[in-house]
Length: 192
Ligand code: G3H
Image (cartoon, rainbow, N blue to C red; front, side):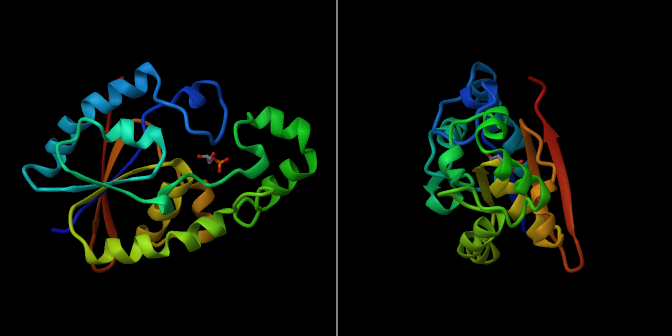
């Protein structure tokens, strides 16, 4: 069978501080996930030879650091760009840009951060990634929540407009097996 594995990066320092965006390193827990990941992947992939795709951001590369496979970085896998809100908490965004906060709440798919991106923008920049994925076998993608929501929605045949609400838990390895009429999903959750 043809599989695709997905994982968010391990918990980052910014995750702990409830800040979005940035380019922070992993927290202690995040590093523990990175250490366990090779074992999880082996459990799920056996001795298949995988290729690991990460974003260009430090937290995805730190998550991939112990994996014994070829690795490729894609700028197109970087997190949704929050523009002027990069590095802020949601509380700070609500205080500083109350109208934007409300607009995003009302239409999370279309809302574009000032100087940044919307989910729709991410879906469009992911097109080459999706095309390449359709041609390849045994790819493990380590990237960010918003990006994974869009990739997951695509393979689950969920309308892209619903991608902002897909649940992609932290510290969980997801295996997708695209079949003729539906994608079969298996999840392995780390106990950390
Ligand atoms: O900073 C980006 C987050 O991964 C996406 O979260 O789209 O639910 O605000 P959100």
